Image (cartoon, rainbow, N blue to C red; front, side, top):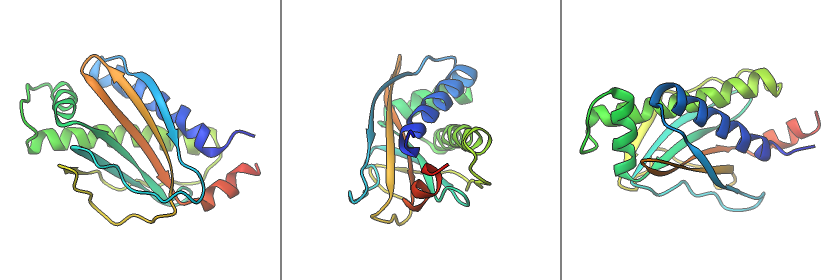
Length: 171
């Protein structure tokens, strides 16, 4: 049976492509995927802009949307329908909302099509310049899916507590 992490890679691709197409009118082309292994020490991404939405309940972890600042400005500007040169409060809000939509797409797919129970989301937070909001466990598993589009490169990462892997792989 396909592992939850392999399934998540596909769900991230579906969600990002759906949101980019519907809200940004941009084609997001999936690139490499990085899947962590059990026992690997988790460290959150260090990037110029990092949005995070938490998952709780049936999947305990979260979703990151990570990019360089110029990419976050471009995506946020298209999403908010404004021209953005710098990452201001409006751009951070828009980037956080994009992360929220992508996290929600993965959440819905996990609950409806993969049999996981309720997965409540937390409101998005955005950190900049390599700062990380929150404390992360070292034993988290993660799936980082990279994307290329006309405006640059970015990745979406789903991270979670490993116990959910054993619970769903026996289904």
